Amino acid sequence: MLTRPFILRALLAFLISLSPLHAREPIKSPPPQQKTVRARDLGIPFDGTPGKFNAITDVAGVEVGYTTLISGEGKLQVGKGPVRTGVTAIIPRGHESLNDPVYAGVFSLNGNGEMTGTAWIEESGFLEGPVVITNTHSVGVARDATINWRVKHGAADNTGYWWSLPVVAETWDGWLNDVNGFHVKPEHVFHALDSAHGGPIDEGSVGGGTGMIAYEFKGGTGTASRVVPVVGYGDPGQKKTPRTYTVGALVQANCGRRPELTIAGIPVGKEIPGEVYKEESGSIIIVIATDAPLLPYQLKRLARRGSLGFARTGTVSKNSSGDFFIAFSTANAGVANPEPLTHSVETIPNDRMDPIFTAVVQATEEAIVNALVDNRSMTGRDNHRVDALPHDRLRELLKKYGRL
View 1 (tube, helix red, strand yellow):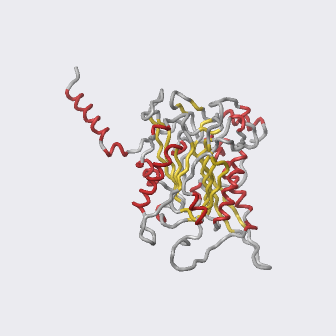
View 2 (spheres, helix red, strand yellow):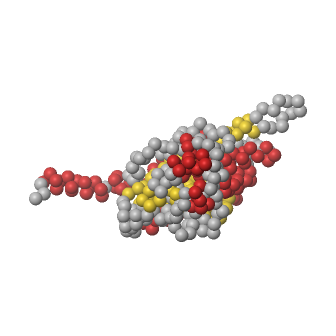
């Protein structure tokens, strides 16, 4: 027989589960079962010099936040789970400068996917607000929630209107996640935006990357950075003093077949055979940030270089892949203001951009490898399992090919 205290506790728990506060609380993943290990910790050789955190947040002002949704297991029940998804938010100038747009450029390597707001970036040259990344079927709710969040956190524009065409990008997580259950809610987008911060950030199965698969290993979120000295010509007889800039990359990696995976020039995917699905059904989103003073057309050139870092890991960007890249610069603050009538801006000559191009390629490559290395195996809907890239086996291959 059930006792009265037991019945009262059960009733209280049920009522709490129905309360609005409980419904708005983001579902968070369990704590990691392993110590964070990044690609460099395994001895993987990368070119270039990383920033302090080797992350996109090494670009001063850039903030990143996540909501990670993990719940349920076993057989798929649409609308109930299992849930393996989330939201990633990137705020270019941070919370303190939400209404100061940044110069930006976008590039589509293969367009079987979605990144909203790009038409206005192409037209205006500005990214006006955050970049949000989630799963394919949550683009709509994430877009609307981002507008809602901006209305609550920012003033109206100079015409008196709250006007927003936010950038929301996606990759598909339906192998592990109940993607048609629409588990990403506005409050999850709000949480990712509100919790965005600088400094070190998590990688792997977090945020929008929670349910992703890359090269048929567990994929997801990865980041890296490079510190770049750029030397100008200077006046005749004047000493050439380099100026140092930072380039950061963040990826949501959900791309490629196992045999394609290449790390440090090693055919890792061929050496560690395995198959998750019969044909590629993934994509990648690459976000490039820099404090180098670049104009929109130059940032479009940076976005295109993300494809070279992507290619270093083995991809050929297949027909079913949605590969969208965006690059922005945090320099030239205030140039979108309607007053004064004219603005002076800084820019780097095209002839001096090669070191920055190189940094984009290097940081993008390492970010993708970090998404694979700084991760763990996951079981999702219908007990689909995706193994993480095995660290010991990868180190054996690095030794075998003389790369350690």
